[in-house]
Figure 1 (cartoon, rainbow, N blue to C red):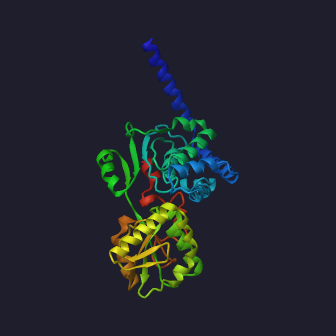
Figure 2 (cartoon, rainbow, N blue to C red):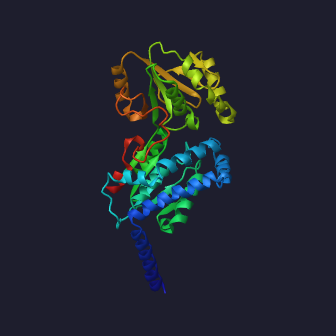
Figure 3 (cartoon, rainbow, N blue to C red):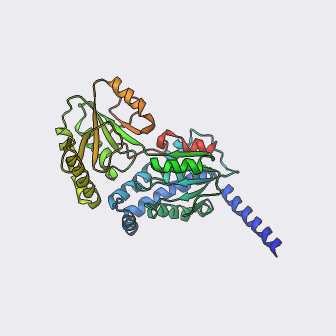
Amino acid sequence: MIFLYKIYAKLVKSLVLHLIYTMNLTQRVLSFSALGDILSAKLEGGSFDSLLSKAYFENQWFTKENSQNAISSIISDFLNKSKIEHWLDRYNLPENNESPKTIGIVMAGNIPLIGWHDLMSTLITGNKALIKLSTKDTTLMKLFIDELVAINTDFKEMIQITDQPLKDFDAIVATGSNNTLRYFEYYFGKYPHILRKNRNSIAILTGNESESELVNLGNDIMTYFGLGCRNVSNLYLPLGYNFNRFFEIIEPWNKVLEHNKYANNYMYNKSILLLNKEKHLDNAFLLLRESKALSTPVSVLNYQYYNTIEEVKSYLQEENDNLQCVVAQGGIIDNTVNFGETQNPQLWDYADGVDVVEFLNS
């Protein structure tokens, strides 16, 4: 009986692997494109309202507006067929992955669906995903996974979610804080890996920015309450920069004070600055302090001054390993992001500049 059971188990495993192999690259691309269409229709129709409320209950930084913004961004930039094909054109991916690997994915939960790109990269290359979800972002990730499996049931055998320590994987992609990076390096360092830590983004201003550029800069700073690695946390300014126009243009973001957790952070950080008699600017919802530090607490934005663009370039080179995005007008600095585009990365805009698909393909 045991012998027959083992034969049966091998046959089942063989059938499962056959199903995975028969879902070729073209079918995977079409599945993700279909996911975008279905999510878009359901989002517009209000079908996800109860799940958005559940996501907020799970993590109160995930307001309905923020969750909708993240979902809409993924639909338009990640689940668009032409964009997927453009993304994959640069790789020599086989139509059929006959040797799929199991990729462990440890996801962060600072902003909604931040781990989706790693999961999509794993699945689009025909590999299997062993996922450790962030406890702060389970509802929305499971929503996306469930909708994908409903479109193509073959994905069910390619995705496993676990709340246990990851094991039995071939490679790992893990995202966390500077503190968890030490944990990642200890436990995952012996495997092929991509291990991510905290990064921040900076904006370079000249004082000649248009009103629309400053409006967009406000979005780069304040979207998701500034919790993302692509949120601008430091302004690099010419000497004598006048903040009046900047404060006036970003004033509509005062709505963040309606959010209890943000308001508490604002009041706390304001108290700390006052107690320490630290010089700062305050527009009643955002605190600005002069500092070269890239990392800031919620409701605080750092700024620093420069004399020449060469000085800026030197600073960016020194901080390269800590920077996610550099925002500036085109032509001032190489490899910059336009104002207002930090929260709209494309499929080929990899976190930390590390090409996940190339890593998986190799």
